[in-house]
Structure formats: structure tokens, C-alpha cells
Length: 608
Image (cartoon, rainbow, N blue to C red; front, top):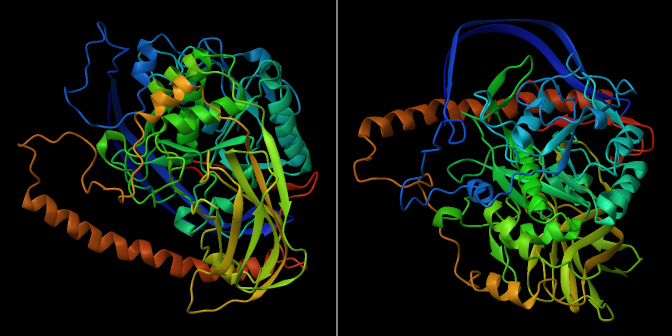
């Protein structure tokens, strides 16, 4: 437990706007003034590994959900021997929370183009991620990292303007490939809800090289943030880093099991860890030997996931990159603490997996991950089947289908569609993929702002779904193309599409593990039951007062109208500057080209 007390006074005024220029985000500031006075800050840190005797215990019978990290630690798994590369805006390896675990020999600054100390060249976001992953224990500083004996190193990819190129990204993601096990990426495309962006050709090749050559050919592990565009209606279906089969996309969930406002949706999200929305945050490392208590959003969630995977690799260093994904799928919990993660739109596929377009397979569980890792046998060889659909122009809305007959896969992993189409209101494009099993993947999400851009095309775009994990693909697959909003009918043409399947011909689990996992997985047709209260044990004396209810209602009446009015004010300005500075002649926004400069935004720094 960490207790913080502070008193801040802040005042500021300014006027600025953002626009796109030369394929990257620029900011124009007319004037700005901000002053902050910190009157007093006092902090007390009491964690079970920072107090003598480790006497802190969870309440008996508590159903409060956790990531089950302590169980992993008690089993002796602390991340020792695992190296995590924090690909970000730099890491200050001299920070007392990080210095004992920091690998200076593996660090590099791709902004400056040389290996340099980062003490004076960091913006803080990378430090926060590093502290969450491998912060030192028992030093009375910034809490303790998930994998507190793992080694970390900083791979600086961004400058102060948060720009990168295909060339620098590709280099960063295979930097010291022979030595780094996990590449933690708490960043991604901007959350503007009209962009369609993914890895450039060099970066795509680097990711493939990483899983082929990394970790003595067992494959480097790449974690990526799912994104923070929930408030703007963005969808990670249009994020090519999430759609790569080589990455593990992570979302966050609030401590009470509710969906954060920043959370994006797409069927390619693999799992969830804790982060925070508004109010509170995660204690971790800051600049200048300091600590912060407000690290939030999918940046924090991704760093936590990287730490959990480091624990898993400590339990079994021989795991392949696909083994790790299978372990996450079989250990994550849709209903931790006996209640379901809220607003997750859960379904259960025919293989028995509960899956959500918000939370993936659910909340990661370190205890289960290391248990499975310690018993794991390498999954069978991966098989790929790609089946082309019709290459004739087809009027849409409509439904097209593909018959899968001669594919050797019997246990699916990733399922992808590749589409070429135009649609009059692209932000309203609904793609739903129905498998022979009856499981339906919601491949896209509604993006209101994209409807205002005038963009129509979706060119050679790949969208990934994990909804069909371990199902048999044999049979008829249907792709339904429609409008989300029937009040404003759209039209267009499908120029071509294909179905891409990845999986194995035999069971990826041993019979012993299969029996153990299946015994705890109940296949049910009942709808999930959600708690309306925070997921914790409540004693009979903890009854909410009527005054508290009244204050809460009054607060909502004031804040909610203000929040809802912000988009109405900002969207017209955004569209104006977009039309003036950004719209391109080809009327399309797709992946970046080699050497181009494009936005990469950290996922959870309040400065951004």
C-alpha cells in the first residue's frame, strides 16, 4: 500500500490546435501560460516486501480480483534472467529504483543515433513503464516492479515531438535481438479516430525477424498497447500493430472491473491488466530520482503485461512466442473475483473460450501463467491457410462467403481478413465475420469522426480476430458488410477479400494440461452476470449513506453534461483543420511508407 498526501495549486491559460502535416501531427500554439505551486508533498510507502516481516495479508475469503502476482513470487518466479527492452522515449538507468536491474550495454538512443546515457534525455514515460516492469523491491522508493529481478534496458525511439520513422521503428524492435527477450511498447498510432495506420514494410519485416530469430529462435515477445482512443470513438481494428499476429495487444480495466473511458475495441486484443481511468493511478518511477502515483491508461497496462510475461519466461525460458500466447489465452480470467469484467460484450466460442472485444481473454493471472509455463510442452508447428474470395467488384452492403475445405488446421489461433473496398461513410462500416461454428467476430467498430473526413477506401487492410481460438475452421465462413447506423444508409463496392487462418493440425495442449484446464472452464449458454458494485468484499457495516448517494448523483449531473459537450465544441474545429491541412488527393489513409515520419503517441502519460 502506498499513501500519498499533497497540496497543489495550479493555474493556466492557453490556445492551441493540432493538425496533420507531412503525415505527422503538428501543434500550433498561439499563447500559453501555466504555473504550478506544490505547497507540500508527503508520501508513505508500505508494501508487503518493503516492511519487515512481510506481515500484510489479504482478508480471508476476499473475492477482490488481482493479477495473482504474489502467488508467482512465492513460487520463486521474479523475472530473474529475463531482459525487457522498454521501447519508448528513453529510460534513466541511473534512477535508484532502476539502476541495479538496468543493462547499460543494451541501451540505445535511436533519436540521437548513438549509445548514450539517458539521464538527461528522457521525458518520463519510459521511466514509468520501466518502474512498473522491474522496479527494485525493499528500497523505500516507488513501490515494486512486477518482475523485480528482471533486467531492463531503454531503447529510445521518440524525440520530444513524438515522431518516428519506419527505419527507426524497425531497428528498435530488433535491437540487440540476441539479448532482449521482451520488447515492451506502450505506444502506437494517434487516437484521432480517422487514421488507419500500421507498421511500415521495414517494421513488418523486423517483427517477423524477431519471432524467427529472437531468443535463440524461440521468438522475441512483443507487447503493444491497444490504444487510448475510446473517448474519441477510435477502434484498434484500424491499428496495424494490434493486428499483427506477432504482437500481444493489451487493454486496461479499472480496479472495480469497469471499462475505462479510454479503452478501444477490436477482436485482436489478447488480454487485460489493471490500469486506471480518472482518479488515482499506479505508483512508479518518475524523472529526477522521483516517483509518481498517477501512471494510467493502456501504457501502464502494457508495462504490467510485460512484467507478467517476464515472470512466465522465468518459470520456463524455453517457451516460444506462440507458447506465450497460448498460455495467456488459457490463464486469463473473464470473471475474476466471481464477477465479470463489465461492458465487455462477452461471448463463449465453441472451444470454450470466453472472449471480449474490449478485454480479450480477460484479466491476466500471473499464478496461472507460471503454473502452466512450468508444465508446458511446445505447441505444434504453425500452419497458415489463405483462401481468396471473389475478385469481382461486389456491391455493398451485402454478405460474401468462403468455403474452407482443404486446410490442415484443426485448432485455430489467429484469424484474419484482408479487404479492399470503398464505402461512402467509412466510419460507419460494419464488418462481421461468422465462422462455421457460429461464432461471430465484430471486426470493426463505429468511428464517428471518420464519417466526417470523406475518406472511403480500405485498401489491402488486414484485421485480426482471436474470437475463434482453438475452433475448427472447416466449413463456410461469411463476411457481412453493413452500416452500423441504419438511419444513414451507405453504399460502396467490395473489390476483393481473403481469409487468412493460422493454427495447428493437432491439439496445442498435452492431454494432462487439457484435462486440468477444461476442468475449470465451464461451457455455458447463459449470459454473463455483472456486478453493479466494486469487486471487493463488503462487510455488513459498509452501507452507503444517503448523503453519499445524493452527492454522487449531483456530481454526475454537473460533470456528465460538461464532458458530453466537449466533442460538440471540438469536432467542428478538428474537421476544419483536418480539411485544411491533412486531406490528401488520393482520398485514402492507410499504412505509412518506408522512411516516412509519423505520429507515435505514448499510451498513458498525462503530459500527452
